Image (tube, rainbow, N blue to C red):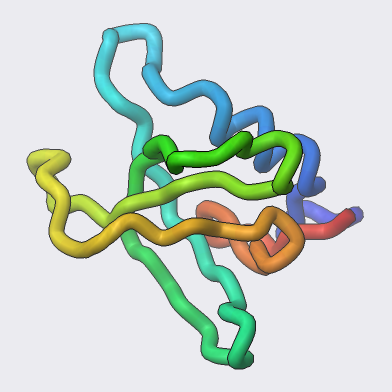
Length: 93
């Protein structure tokens, strides 16, 4: 693993920490591949919930936000194995 990559388990750990030490919701950038092969890049996003068992289904919920943390689009259900980039770093298993 080089300096331009991050392990998937570290990505999941960072996604599970939704609030920083100041009590502000943590933002991140993420690139994922949809089932149809389309690449989606969210420049600024936050973690959100989905109406399912996230760990059992290997899913996480993310929603794109603006600089004031207001939602600017719909919730994306993300299959963890489809995450290819996180905060500018390539995701490795």
